[in-house]
Amino acid sequence: MAADLDRCDVSCIHRDVVEEVRRQMVEATVAQALAGLFKILGDPTRVKILFALLKRELCVCDIAAVIGASESAVSHQLRLLRTHKLVKNRREGKVLYYSLADDHVEILFSQGLDHVAHS
Amino acid sequence: MAADLDRCDVSCIHRDVVEEVRRQMVEATVAQALAGLFKILGDPTRVKILFALLKRELCVCDIAAVIGASESAVSHQLRLLRTHKLVKNRREGKVLYYSLADDHVEILFSQGLDHVAHS
DNA sequence: TCAACATTTGAACACTTGTTCATATGTTGA
DNA sequence: TCAACATATGAACAAGTGTTCAAATGTTGA
Image (cartoon, rainbow over the protein chains, first blue to last red):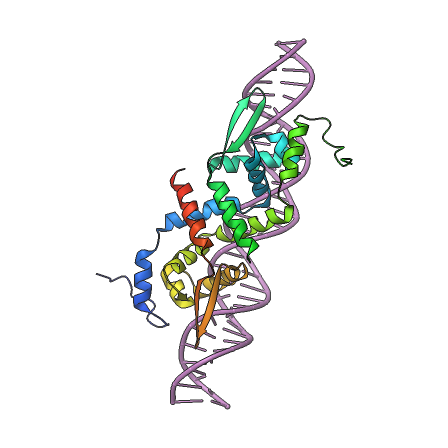
């Protein structure tokens, strides 16, 4: 057992600590998924879109007008947001109304704002 | 007043709604800052680092060993995390021990995990 | 069926980002 | 003072990202 730790003989450090923390570490796929979510939230255009949708349901054209971006750009970003289950849409005639998919965004934003305010 | 809304005459949409939401919109700089924070959290390596530090204080070398990355790569990322006040460090001889700067990361991660779990 | 409209899609481009490698700090014990 | 070590830094490169422009859907009222 524990035969796969042959490396790292030379340099530093606290073998036992590394072992312990490594055991408690989250799976790589989970870290990947979490980073994937934050990456989506890590763009000003998308943040503005979500902020707008935090206030109320909006169609693509309105979103574009509110945040000052082209409708194409907004549409591209909405697809990403939809893929990551951050927004959902509903059709009414030719118009697609977008809204937040759940309340995670609100909590994430409030925490995030709290952080940037105190830094 | 309201003289800067000359554009967008042609296309769609709900002028009043756009006006209303635009008034409630967050400043562009705030959206930028928030996106900046999430961008930092939007990388698997940095997520792993923060996950490790969630467990306990660690030195650069240990972090590298735990997450399986080079010490240089970890150092580069730690600088980013430090710049954004997500981690802090303390020196003990040659060794620099890093830890989380506050508890925002924990809450953000738990909300983020909750989202990816239900999507 | 058709024209008008809201939205989507694809390709292309400039731009950003994370890693690697080599080198530079800064600290320690001798 | 020096060598050994932990970490930081800079340049450079491949890979990823967001926007734009042009064209394609899909829906409606006439």
